Image (cartoon, rainbow, N blue to C red; front, side, top):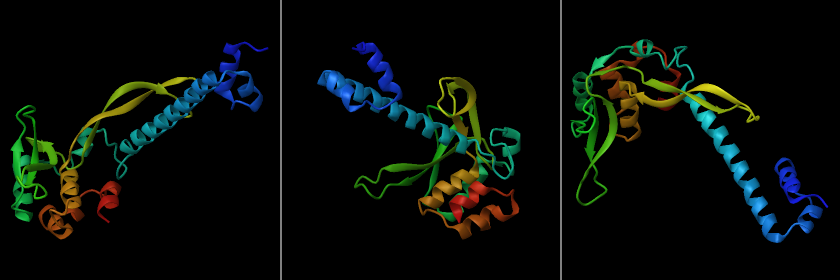
Length: 202
């Protein structure tokens, strides 16, 4: 009769057959099933995480989105970005973060609650704002793309510096500004081609 440890090892590489299930105690069968289900779930989660990371790092308009200099585009000071946005919707306002003073956000009154609490709808750097968001990465060791029993080094997105185009997208999705207003104040059509911008605004 095969040892229990051998049966567990074999169960990791192929489904348990009817004969094996009959040999093992029911409680052990349940534990092995949970182990296999958790392994498949982890495999899916790893694949999804790699896919999300690849999408974030995909070049935009042929430009490396981690290249801070290339992503500057038509850089604007935060005060100018806010000035133009308020012309499109005067109900918005900007507040500097107390905890992270190099950052700030645009807010609007949340009319869905009786207290009309403020709600942040977009974040941006407090000083200069690049036109395009900059993805900040860190080296990371992860399982290979095909989840083979090997590891590889990749650049994993850790955070990002929001560009003013991203701020406009957030406001547009909230219905707080219009495409026509965006073009009038920011003249998107005169800037660099961006597949990401087209994907979210068309």
